[in-house]
Length: 364
Image (cartoon, rainbow, N blue to C red):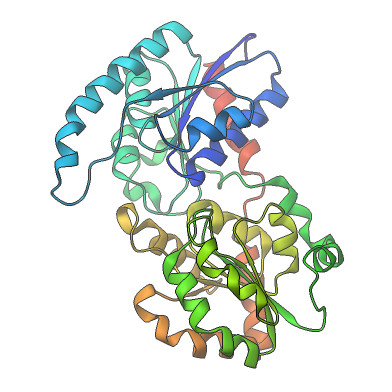
């Protein structure tokens, strides 16, 4: 890779797009400390806060997605797209990137489209087992597509696909040495099994409602809960901190210790979460959100459950949850097989492999 090199990264809207982008930048920065980085995000989205916190400059585009139902908001989309294409063109002309990387989100569409039209090498990092519309369109012009799941040649040119996995927090690789620390950190009873409940940073209403309705059930099962209810719901559910063996958290700052403490995990199935849970290797029940683009969480969860590596419970089937959980709790063999099978899907070196592919593009 020539020095100095200019690296443009676009991704955002959710943590599942932002954190992989930051992880890729961090790895590139370690290898090439003289490189110059610039991020492109969507104005008013969380990347405009999270990226500067990670130490990188970011510029915002006036862009949003098309609503899937008829709404007045869609009337502004053509204007936003034209504005974003113009702004992305200006950014690229001034920054002169050697490579442009897209990790998904509204801003990555116009950014990678302009870059590919200018002949700048582009790389897509697709986190999900079922890609969104933007990445399907961008794939035709992209030079390389790094994926985390098999069978994506249905959507992308097979010659461009490299299976790398999704970038994950590196501190998760050593959680199996942190059990004692985790029990102490969360003040847990080591004689009881621990259930970790994850609904994302904002929270998941259906999962929170499920856990609330099953507090007495969990107490009968003699388990303790680490319940991450999310920013949007903490005022509603923090009262359950008064219940025996229940602790409610808005946010878990030490995810490595939360995973280390868990014997069972109940989680959404966003791409980053699914990749992390493969590395963590604990018996997992996925309750995917049905309210996301292309229903990709259900497809992520199903791709793992189909390999007998996790249990999938749809939101429409939550009445079956007590039977599913109690059966798993009593079946040691099932717990062990789920744990072994999900570990086989882990791709812990994803960030390094993605950066290897970026280097190849710049060398070209």
